[in-house]
Amino acid sequence: GELWDTHATFPRSKLAHMSIFDSLKSVAQSRVPCIWTVPIALAFLFCGAYFYSGSSHPPEMVRAPFPRDGGSYYATEKATEIMFNNAGKPTCNDFFTVFTAGVGAAAKESCLKPFKELSDRFEVWNDQMRSLNSTMYVYTNFHDGHMCQFSGYPNLKMVNFDTDALFAKFNMTEALATMKAWPGRPTRVADVMRLLLAREYHRTYIDMDILLIDAHRAHYMHPFAGAAIFQDNKNALEITNSAFCLPSSILERMIAFVDRRIRLGSNNYFYTELGPSMFHKVLFNQYPAVSLFSQNHPAVADLDRLAREALIYNHRTIHLSGHVRKGHPEYTYRELALATKEKLVSVNSQLKR
Image (tube, rainbow, N blue to C red):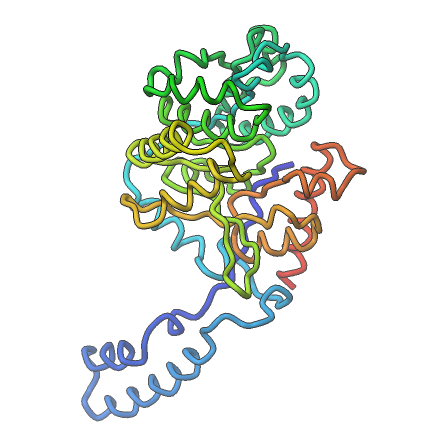
């Protein structure tokens, strides 16, 4: 079955999006006999006030059974399509992820063991790419990466890259030398590599534990970054680097940021410093603008809540993070992805009632 066509919408009356003054103006400009102008204007005033008063978001909307037609409470599918249709030429082409061995001594390890451990994720990714009629490029720097090729996964393509050559191309040889001395920091290394590969190949980066739940491939090919909703009632968000498509100009600013931080900063890093934290610093107050695609709270493992919020906010990605996976030890990764799909479908049915 398809995992991706489960969007939620909460359509409102058009009048709810029209100011009372616009309503009166439309009456005044119409070809209605003057004798009827005042009564009609008063009727519009009354109806406009009635609908306008209900246009704010209901406080209990997560549990409210709104009708649905393909978008979310905040943006209908039609409005979304208009946005993407006006977005111009796509910034990215196809998808990629990084299957990295690191840059230090670990880079000499064999790809065979981690490749086998990730086999169910690759299976899920092949299904997703087939659904979107697309290809996922899996970039690897394992010295024996040629031994880890996909068999039976026509929508995945393993591509070897040379770490030294890639960093040299971006004048980051000095930074790479520093990174090689890091005592086992695969997350930070992967944070940097995905930026360089995104700039080099102009593709959309996706973490291996991300589910794409938008049925439209094109929506992922325009500038966006994920934003996890940590606490809705306090507007607490975290811009993530788990999924993004960014123009070259912004990627170059990010690369310059991490290069300078690695070369000139101390060797004491906090966990997200070269990832989400750096995204915050660079994406704010920048041009061109980048859309923020809502995403689930990565530390919440409750699939019912995850599905409800995905449908309420019209998430385009779901992050089956380490916290989510640890919360469901009874599932393999593929089983967890399928359980998430089933939960989306069941919750969608509940919200339609």
